[in-house]
Image 1 (tube, rainbow, N blue to C red):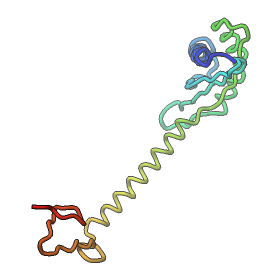
Image 2: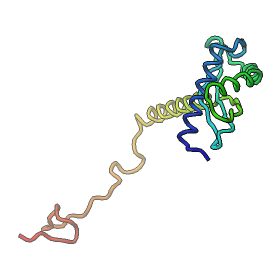
Image 3: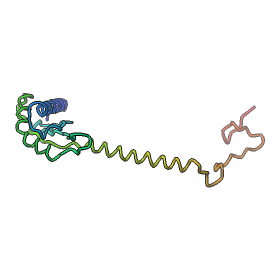
Image 4: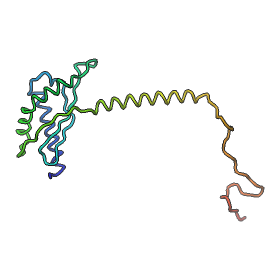
Length: 160
């Protein structure tokens, strides 16, 4: 087992090396819209999982995840060589590329929150003109007897 801080530092370095290589050195057009979001390294430093997202060419275009995955798979050997040269560790970790689902999950959560807000507004509109079904004051008033001090706790009397 390796120090967890060392594993995190190596993971960050691997992510930086891979992102830089994809951006500047690898000339595959399938990787043009790929962004590296996170990297995790196993405790023995032998395997690295690189998470990525893919943007569309513009806001209206859906990202092509299949083509990007094929491009990353083809460039895996070159990227692993770059990682080995850039990290200087004895054993260069194997690279595994996984599409990051966090942006999709965040988008889904935003949609759910928008639906919940709309439902809350509808309930607030319906409750605006509503009146209680029972008595106007459903709580019973405590019985006040003559001579009792209203401010004293129940069961005790104030001595004058």
